[in-house]
Amino acid sequence: MANVQRDLSVSVFATRLLRRGLVALVGIGWVAVVGGATPLPATRAIEVTLTLPVDVKEVELRFRSARNRPMSKITDISPTHPAPATVLPSPKPDKEVWYPVVDLQLNAGVTGVLRWQTAPRLIAVNHHFHGKTEAGQLEMSVAAQQLESWENSVYCEPAVALEDFYLRALVPVINGGLKYSVQGLGEEWAGTVARVEASTGKEIEILRRDPRPFVSAQVGGGATRPLTRGNLEQSLRDSVNYLLRSQNRNLASPTAGGLHLFYDLDAQTYRSSHWIWGAGPAVSALLEAEKIPAVAKDFPDRQLTDRADEIGRSGLALRIMDPAHPAYGISLSRWRRAIDLPFGYEQCAAVSDALFLSGWAWIPLYRATGNIEYLRATELLAASTARLMKAYELVPQDYYVDRREWSEHTIDESGFGVEGLRALFECTHDPRYQRQADDYMKQHLAKLARADGLWERGWNRRTGVMPTIRMTRGLGWSMEGLLAAHEAVPMGGYLAQAQRLAEQMAQWQRPDGCWVFIADQPIERHGISEKGTALWSLHFYRLYRATGDARHLAVARRALAWCISNQYRGPDRQALGGIVGMTEHSAVGAGHRAWFKVTCAYTTGFAALAVMEELKLLAIEPRIFTEKP
Image (cartoon, rainbow, N blue to C red):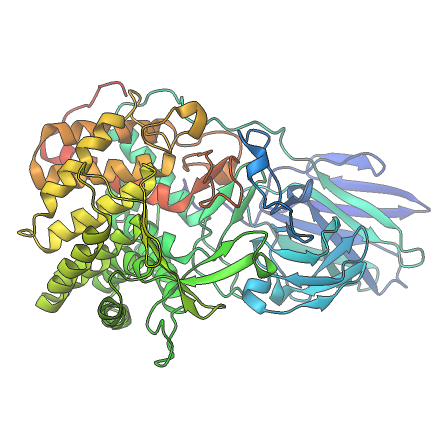
């Protein structure tokens, strides 16, 4: 446990001695006079101890995180964006979504405080979860129950600057003594703590920790790490710890127990706890990693299974369970973001995403825990999918919950829905699910297959084919569907189609092992597809299992070597073990954080699963892989 279970009880003590305006701070190994910055050691907890006049009965403390200097917003455009004029709609709507960060535990009684440059007409805090709007005011308080850990969304009309955000605690003073402890959410906390002078309302800073100097993360180009057992096991440990740090531990959150899908290195915050489907590979990675002795020794027995179970139950809780609802039995997929959407969000339920989640998370968790709810949820999802397969030529991509309508389009990634049907068939041996997996894939191939082995980008019920853009990640989702279909229906001819698609992708793999975001285009224009590279590494391992073709194994290993060589090992301790990407879809979707540096939980999950495929091969035939990527 030494590698992962850090002592969370380390405290920083600040004793404030009042002498007519002269304030001294006493901490661990230092004494300073307020007026200059007082450094704090890197810790997970802050404990404030004040000595005050005996007639003081209560003190207001204000905690400001350095992660809100500056505060990010939906209209931010990366300075590295190659086409910044294309990012926002024109004309841009007169509204804004700000993302204040909460990186401290929300103790009882804590409130958040927003202060605006000028009072907006309308404000909505985390509207995608709570649905509440308020009339604008220059300063307003937000109850802890309405705040999320890490990223919060604060919508305003018109677009007004959110000048300040802090956490406010009213702390009782007993006979002149005050003691208050708050836990940091991250590996380290930076920011300021101030108390408010009751008589004047003036803030007096009592603690300060400045953030580490910003070091821009590297994307690609990492020092080559051969696929030795030691490197693989270290990579897996790093991946597991990254996934555990990404979990949403805020019990008041609607997505409690699930994952924040992204960590944004430029803004230094976790994002998108509401991107539900992407947590699937993390669940399988945690369950499988617990079987690896080099990883399991760092954790109490079944801890990784328990944490995976928390992630899985979070997804179960977000299913639509009204039998009269058009998306009955389907779990929410995500809240899509865009500045031109109402309050900046749109709630989506997707059949294919839910099937993906069930294949990677629910059925593996049923096998690991025996919880029948996971199996029943997947069976209900399969029944809802069958109903939609009869109603449509091709199951629509999304049900827009707020609009109350199905999308007109289906895109290539919908193919990965076979993963859930495959897992259900393998678990139950019920031939209904084998036939359904076969029919589901046939419907997709009828609309999306191409003569060259690629898939079209999508199909629209009104306008027809959406031509392929050769996106590495999108084609990877198509490949996942083909591999899952082959595993469910070995005589269905899907392996040959998977091999044809693989041949195309192998041609586009770069010498260092990665792929470009648009597979056949220059890396300078589109960036490295770190998500696609991890995904395709696992796919080529699965393909090698099916074919025994050494060429497939060579491609898988080059991609995996790139992944473990480019796991983040820099100064931002939250990002350790992730793989940094920076493309037009950094945080998935061109309308949010494009060309910012972001790590992704499902990237880490797929990389971890690929590592374990290689470890299985080493167990069969021990050797050292030394080929340079």
